[in-house]
Image 1 (cartoon, rainbow, N blue to C red):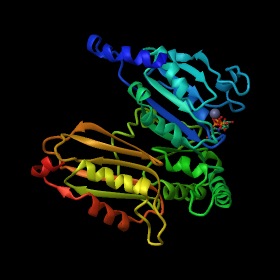
Image 2: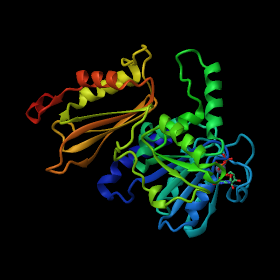
Image 3: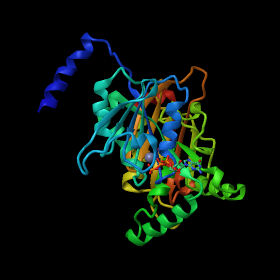
Length: 362
Ligand SMILES: Nc1nc2c(ncn2[C@@H]2O[C@H](COP(=O)(O)OP(=O)(O)OP(=O)(O)O)[C@@H](O)[C@H]2O)c(=O)[nH]1
Ligand SMILES: [Zn+2]
């Protein structure tokens, strides 16, 4: 009830007070237990980043200095404690998925300009990521800058194999047979291949091809102790630009010059994600983990960005097309049972290219 009253009041505010704060980017850091997530956090915080960073820890592992320095709340309680870090950074630890922490963090607005959120090693990052689109109030405060998955080079092949076996024995037939480790890889915008000091160059090659087979769209940075160039991690803007350089087994891209109707595009995406209208040659419906897209929509000067994590989808208008920039629509899919020609066929038949003078038919 109070919340309702508050948002009513807020509705009047924009007329009187100019928007004071721009939405703050949130970077989700995920990866298996012990992969190096906290090492990455600590590294980012100690490097020069010219940002005031707020950190949200979603769990307590053993061992890391930062985690130890936080006292742990009672088991099962929603717990939150704030800690001032170097360079005016803030740190907070929570036992839930981090959304409540972000809401609370917003009360400290103005004291930070970037949020790092470390998920538990056992978690599928999908639900956390999609909350930024589902929760509209939260969505005006923060935006998802990207998902970084830290991979333990020493263990990843074994972890992927075991998790897939486990998932296959548990799940009923046509359900997701991808374990959490593979989902973490699939959802990544950036893969940090950590602990390269513990493997041979030949092993590294094998790991790379395993990762690329699951997610060929993510950038991949091999490293030790997460010492990566911060420019490659912070401000990813993974959901604003759509990069199509790579391709692989688990990744399909479709590209068509020209403009399309927004409603055609949406019905294609809905059919794909919800009605499962597209299947591979063996009749298995596409199991989409991630989709990113950028479209040129008739009658619209800005590019339309499409995003999906699992079945949750979001569209948003982004930057303007330059006057002489060729209009193009591109979609990238990461998932299973992806058959490029079937997808392309469905795309062509559902989303015809239309010319600008047909714009009134939108
Ligand atoms: N040899 C080696 N050890 C590393 C590297 N990166 C991190 N470690 C060690 O691996 C262990 C786990 O690192 P963390 O950063 O705590 O991993 P995490 O992903 O946060 O772990 P959880 O929060 O428990 O899931 C620590 O003992 C690190 O010092 C690396 O590149 N090489
Ligand atoms: Zn950790």
